[in-house]
Length: 305
Picture 1 (cartoon, rainbow, N blue to C red):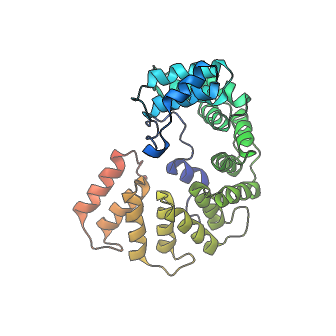
Picture 2 (picture 1 turned 120 degrees about the vertical axis):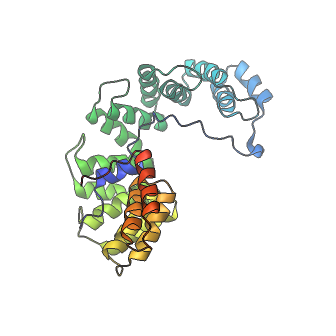
Picture 3 (picture 1 turned 120 degrees about the horizontal axis):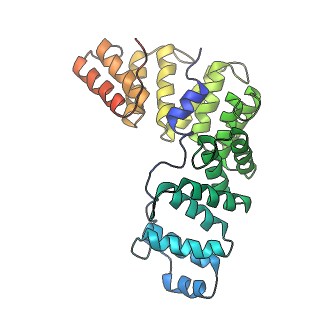
């Protein structure tokens, strides 16, 4: 039985999406953590690169000052000139995503590499992503894997998960299901829901270990409890197929609907199909069309007839 393919599932769930997505900077934290800008400015003017970085973060998030991404870049640039690696990473993100400036993927790679070579873990992950996708640089799966491994060796869960994907699919490394499952389990134990469904998928397929539907279901539930939409979809698949639980189409539909409402396009399509067929839910063609149209509008590629 194959609940979901490892690569396809993790791509759909987002782990292979590069850092190039045009998402906004994170929101400002609670007011209690607003920095003392006057004190940071005093330290920065005395040459403290950490203070320069913190002022840059404050401007990028509108924390204690009016949000100003160009001013953030100015402070990150000053800190980077003094060798501050996280500021270099942030300059790379600004260049990649077009925050406070025009997008420049080549410059983004330059900053990511500088920061990664100085040991900045987020920069290692960012560099690995752009090397994987060929953004601003020729795609290089071997070097991408090397940087994911470097980040994973520091204990970074996201990097460990992606390294597991590489082993599962033989990208930049020799394909090795046992190593993939081992890495997924490590990242899962660190609380990464993507790793939970990766390990669950492998166990449901009998890859890297004998098939274990009970453990797969436990991992899918664990990921779903953390809000991971694709894990919700996988729980639905388990109920639909009767793996580790009695077949229950109404319960399957409930999980598919939950996943769809959390944004999973495959689940949207499944919900639509079940409405059209009256499978686990009262038949409703109009509602079925609405859900499948929504799936297509959000990028779902419908299966061939």
